[in-house]
Image 1 (cartoon, rainbow, N blue to C red):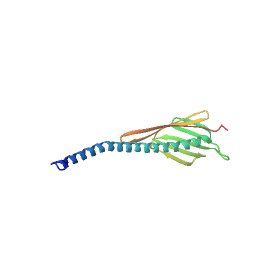
Image 2: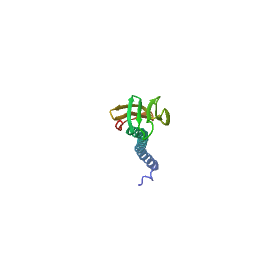
Image 3: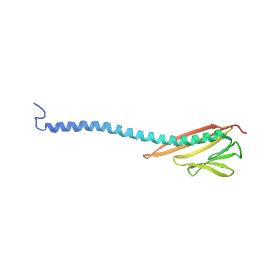
Image 4: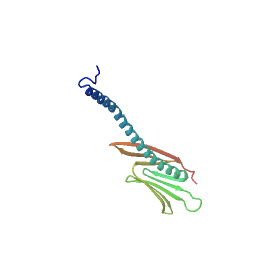
Length: 160
């Protein structure tokens, strides 16, 4: 005799289908949610990396063209020689969670760039011809904190 011909056979088939669907959904939904969470973390880390690379690239470029460097914690001053005329000064300073880069010539600001969040902290150093910075980039995501510490070093030109 067929199961569906018996009284309540359809109900048993429906309960079985719902149970199997529940097991499948109970397995698949957490996997999908975890994949989404990992994708969000990957995107956040990539964005932190982009900001870190932008700051690093600018600092490396300035340091390679500098003939003199002075560093003191949250401040870096580079002297950049020009072909003719007075030298330029490139100043990096970190105040109130904002990194400011200024290019100065004869006391006038020629260009200014600023980076804020996600930059939490930066420390500059200069030893001999080497110039560098240690930075901490941070982003909050879903109640958790993603931190990306970066270090950049460059060798400046010989003193002229």
